[in-house]
Length: 126
View 1 (cartoon, helix red, strand yellow):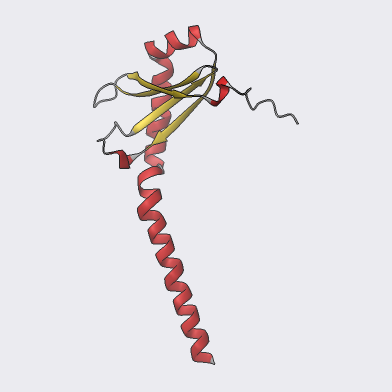
View 2: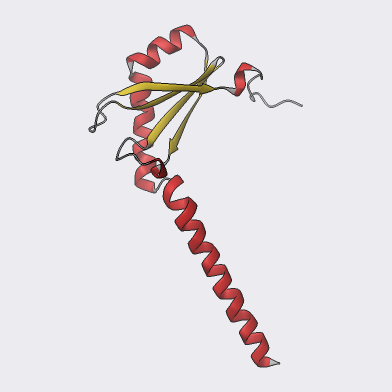
């Protein structure tokens, strides 16, 4: 009986460790920012707000939210796998570094925005 419990705990421990390793290899390593990358993304948000593309955008549409994203799995090189999304009431605009030094940010695409069909989430109300 004691041997079966030890074997069960051993198998359970191996399973949990394999799950955690798999999650790190498949998700966290590619899509979650490290502490250093979080700082870089924060600085990229500031550069985005200072960019000419953003200023032009802010004049013509209501900016609702700014979000950061990292995707190392898409095949780009540093710093091109970092993205800043600017959500407006019309659509979401994607910004990325314009060069390898990331001296300025530029708009490189757009996506659908939920705010085109829905109202903003704040203030909270029922």
